[in-house]
Image (cartoon, rainbow, N blue to C red; front, side, top):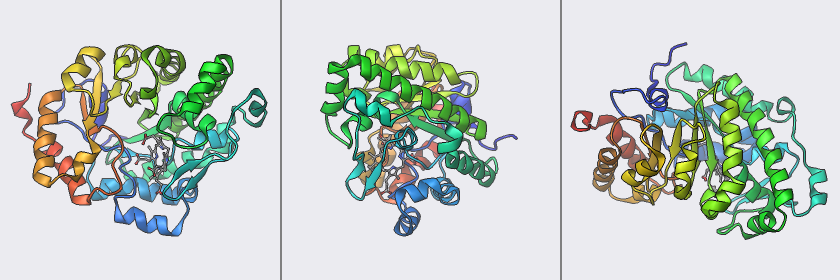
Length: 346
Ligand code: CP3
């Protein structure tokens, strides 16, 4: 089973490659008219739970945009759902968990679930996607980092500050660590099952890692990420994207992760200095910059490629693509990475 395009996996292993691989976080989503069509007919969790729909949505950006990897269409919030919490997705508002975790008593409502009994539909989707991809590009699996999942399980909805989640950690550190450990155990079993079903690599999304100080990140996020990376290291390479947590790139680089994701608020030389010379870096184009005129997108993408260099690098956005990005603009970003003259780079 040889992949026709394995640039991403080579970059994750730090191998010398002819050109930089490119994919976009949230590449399967609302900026694609083909996705919107499916969205009109089925609810969000119907789309996640129906392997046929998840497979079709996952493959759309491969066919339409020409990215070098597919990322499973699902959501990080299927984990709290499997643990026993109700999760709703409210149109134009985002996730809503009507009964969040606030006290020790609330732990009676959650558990570390059997993955086969709860998230089997994800593994069914992965098998179908692998079949349909027919080895064209690698498939990325994913999960949320335990800290980011705790944010939603405690706060109950999106937030700019996640103050209630932080208050829970600061007031009840023992309970918080217990919850983080339950999420970690679930996530390890879940990612192992994804790898078993066929994903080639996994990304851990710590979207809210940057809300914590370095000291608190090292208490409430890093140890759990490290447990996950260690548990799956012999099975697949891991990409860790801890948005905004640039002050922990040094410790994150020692977790055993193959790559670290970056947002656009850090420069390539700074990230390289903090993360060291061996690990692969991924990022970090400002998603809103895709709203610029195409010539600007081309110029700034080239600037990014020159700053990171060819080796140990995966081109990506610094966070998920925005729903109002024109498809042509996303294509311009991807094509600039694919057509760049890498002989110019060290
Ligand atoms: O990257 C991909 O293309 C794969 C699919 C994917 C989704 N969610 C689909 C989705 C991935 C990797 C995620 C991860 C995710 N989900 C994260 C981490 C990444 C990040 O963006 O920080 C987070 C924090 C969530 C939780 C979540 N799910 C939020 C906050 C929202 C609402 C905001 C939004 O973007 O709409 C969702 C819903 C969601 N997940 C959508 C999609 C395509 C939009 C649903 C729709 O079509 O209406």
